[in-house]
Image (cartoon, rainbow, N blue to C red; front, top):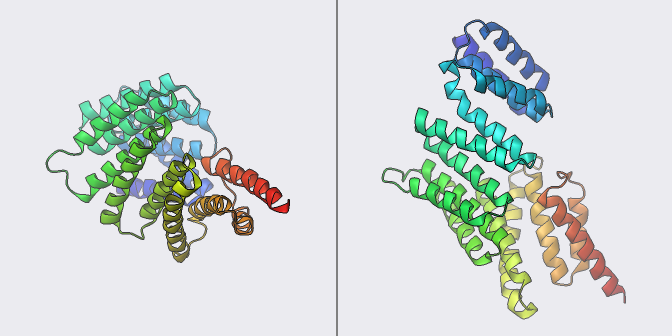
Length: 321
């Protein structure tokens, strides 16, 4: 059993590092070794193999494995089933099958509440459910689910760092819901509450804290969009100051690959600020730096970069006149 656990941990580590072939070899060895007895570790192996299949784009094959785990009657699979339902829910939502995804999340929640009360998994599931309802613009339902999660995390005995960080994640989800609803004030307030927690629990220069500094700054920029130039100036100046500090902190971490998207996001937003300030040369310099970073297709970042390009070209034409 010890040898198999070591093999599974090694396979997971290889998968995380991107050594795909080595990870698959170990998963398949473990699958062959465990097929007869089908212990908990056997089902953990199948589940982790399915995650790697998803990572390499073999989603249908992964779904077959996940559905096999769900259909088994063995109690040895129970500790895995909750996460299996979550994964199937995520895949369904990605495919815009929201109702199906929500059904999987409900099944996951039942496993985590009835089989073993796991507050971390319950909170994760509720966040996913809220984000699924957000996709269908059911903002009130999403908010109710997240408020329920916050209430559960505010019970006596949940003052430790672990629970505080979970509350910060839920508050960030609340911020997203209010942002999509058009309530920028509430969105900003929840994002600031999350940021305060990250600063106190992780430190001001932790990557997660810095990402949340960036998130709050984006909300400030969005708030400024509806104001006159004179009204917006102080808000934009504050956002610019925070973003420049976060950018400097990310660059000082000396891991340009790991934080490339963070750097690209901050430079994009600073480029938008430069356009607003009427500084095309500064914006163009930032854009050139961003274009050296390959961002995910159809991501929010890609869309913001496209917006920066359009606004910058418009500004440059105006300056030429």
